[in-house]
Structures are given as structure tokens and as C-alpha cells.
Image (cartoon, rainbow, N blue to C red; front, side, top):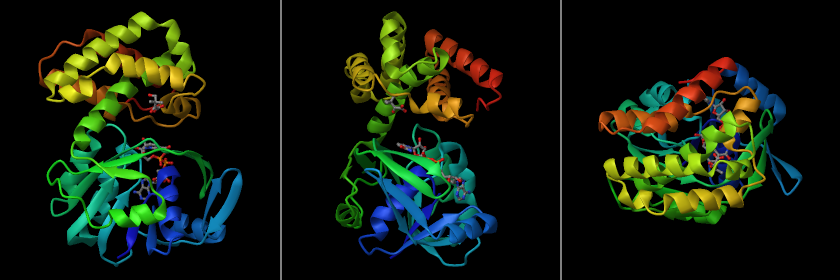
Length: 303
Ligand code: NAD
Ligand code: KPL
């Protein structure tokens, strides 16, 4: 059974290459005919590992291809996922499976509404990859991917294909807790790195702000029925700041490169959830307002 992969960006390419090179059938789904022609001119996807580039001539098509889709890896940004899946909805088989790689929360529910007949498997990944050029991706950091389905705890039969492909993963019985935890970490770290324009380690100069944000995020997680995700959040945030002190957060990298951020699915989602629960989170709200102003001042969308 083919792996259809929507989005030949960083993570999509990383998955596509690893699945294809162990002999599994993979079909990339590209945005339109002109992207498909550019891909064909490039001769395939290039993955750079440990400084060594290798070209992989993986099959590709556009959303207009008539082939039915049984298993779809959705590897675009959170803000593109709903529309991208809506376009593919007529091609999805009755019992199709969607694997959603998007960071943050909110896009998964929007995608599920576009494909009510499909099983949606949510993922949370600590792998690192970035696009060096069109169809050329660097595997920058080995990590782990958790997969899970809050509506059906039984693991899908294809996890052994990930094993064979060297995609390090675990089936999680509480994927929502993992996604909320990652969202909270990202909310405590990423916006401040944008506003102070600093590496993650630079946040050790702002301990009081981190403490206050973690307290509100912890309360929010508990209010949203995610107490496990709130446990020792402050300690973990400090640990991540230390462990990644030399790195620029993904949000700051996006801003510096003039790319849209996933703010709506991180801090935006946290503030919206607090509002739904009538929970006062004044510092998170103030942070959101400052970040929106900062993005607008840089000509970037704040949604
Ligand atoms: P990316 O921007 O590198 O790749 C997304 C790709 O999707 C782009 O090539 C874009 O052209 C394509 N796309 C968008 N709409 C499309 C459509 N309708 N049809 C076909 N293609 C379409 O993004 P990424 O870094 O791979 O991130 C994907 C998700 O994974 C994000 O939510 C991100 O936060 C998450 N994530 C990324 C990393 C990483 O290291 N890159 C790590 C963990 C999580
Ligand atoms: O995931 C991250 C990111 O940069 O997006 C970390 C390193 C956890 C910072 O929030």
C-alpha cells in the first residue's frame, strides 16, 4: 500500500526518503503542475545526512491525480493542513488513514472535519530538518516521533514499516497530553525568543517572565483536562532552555526568514482555550498581543 505524502518540505521529505529507500511505495503530492515540473527537473528529492547529499527519485503527482489514497502523511504547516486535505478529500478511501505531523493544536480538528470517514493519527516529533533549497533537505537532528489516536487506542498495522525505515517512534496512548506539553513548552520559549531576538539560552536572563508564564500554562493545562502535561512544566522549560541554549527557536527562525509562523496553533490556541474556559491568563494574553504586534510590524501574518 502506497504512502502518499502531502508536502515535500522538511519533514515530508525526511519521511519520504526513509520510507522509499527501504523499498516501500511512496508518492509525493505536490502543490500544482508547475511544482511537479520543477520536481521532475530536479530529478527527485535530495536528503543531506552528515554533510552527504543523496538524490532519491521518488514518484510524485499533484492533488488532481485520480489514484485513491489509503494512507496519507500530512506534512505541511499547520495553517495549510485544512485546505490541503479538503482538496484531497474526494480521493480518500472510505477507511483512509491520515497521519498529521503538525505542531501545536487546532489544525488536527480542522483536518478531521474535512475527512470524517478517515482515521486521524496525530504525531508529535522532536526530529529536526530544514530546507536548504527546493527539494533539498538537511537532516539536522535525530529525534523521536510519538503517534497516537485519541479516539482509538489500537496501533495501526504499519508501525513495522516505520521500524524498517529507521523512523524512531512510539505509539502513545495519550498523544493529546504530548501535544499539549509540547505546545506549552513552545509557548513558554518561542515567543520570548522572538521578542528578545535571542537564542533559547538568552531566556535565562528573564527568569521571572518564564516562571509567570509556566504558572499560567500549568493552570491552563489542568483546566483543559491535561494535568499530566502540567507536571513539572517549569523545570522542563528551564531544562530545555539550557539544553538548547545555543539554538534559535523554530519561531524565531521563521521570523528572521520572513516566513509565516504557527502562532495561531501555539499561543493563539492557548489563549483561545483559556477564553473558552473563562480562565484568566493575563501574562499569556499580554505575550500574545506583543507577539502579534511584532509580527505585524515585520509584515508577517499574526493568524
Ligand atoms: P515545510 O514548510 O518545510 O514543508 C511544508 C511543505 O508543504 C512545503 O513544501 C509546502 O510547499 C507544502 N505544502 C503546503 N500546502 C500544500 C498543498 N496544498 N499541497 C502540497 N504541498 C503543500 O514545513 P516543515 O518544517 O516540514 O513542517 C511541517 C510541520 O511539522 C509543521 O507543523 C512543523 O511545526 C512540524 N515540525 C517540523 C519540524 C522540522 O524540523 N522541520 C520538527 C517538528 C515538527
Ligand atoms: O521545539 C522547540 C522549537 O524551537 O520550536 C523548542 C526547542 C522546544 C523551543 O520551544
